[in-house]
Amino acid sequence: AQKITQTQPGMFVQEKEAVTLDCTYDTSDPSYGLFWYKQPSSGEMIFLIYQGSYDQQNATEGRYSLNFQKARKSANLVISASQLGDSAMYFCAMREGSASKIIFGSGTRLSIRP
Amino acid sequence: DTAVSQTPKYLVTQMGNDKSIKCEQNLGHDTMYWYKQDSKKFLKIMFSYNNKELIINETVPNRFSPKSPDKAHLNLHINSLELGDSAVYFCASSLKGGSYEQYFGPGTRLTVT
Image (cartoon, rainbow over all chains, first blue to last red; front, side):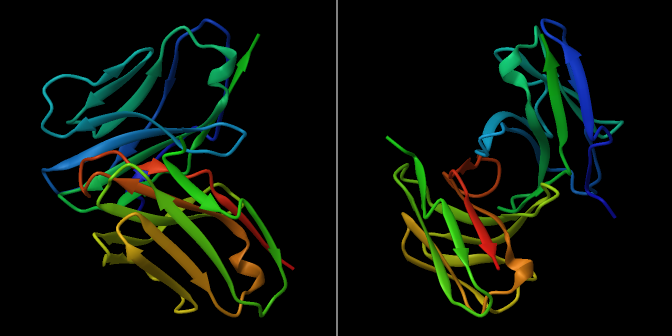
């Protein structure tokens, strides 16, 4: 079974609009962590944001915020005021328990239109 | 200064050859990883080392052998290369395992002809 599901293979958004990238996860471990990474066309993987399962508040990092809904097992990434440079692949990922292993979703390709 | 570096960036080779990819991190991290990203962009962990000790070994053909001479280096050696090995290989490191974010190298694009 898929542990991390990203249902949007691709998205187009107008510049300056906010965008939400969906991510749902599946785990029975009460302790887990959720990550979002960005992969621009140049290929590098860039860490964006982290949410721990016991964190009381949604994580935020600049224009990035993570909409964490534990009961729904969703961890959507919200990018406010999108910019052309936000065009990239975005990956949601999860760590279960204290394991070092991170499992990645299939990614969403985000394209920002000028 | 580059935090996680990999060499080479591109590697083109023929089936049956043996090749190595080197990875170094200067972040003082304890844990290092190798990932494979296929042509559909799917990213999957292959190996992880913590302080030179192998802690994750996914279902990877034994033609792939990681080696960690010290905690700042994690190399990947691949024997008898096959067409299906063509992919982008990423090295990553984290302060420790678990909740700490992983910092990725620039990737090595391996093409087997």
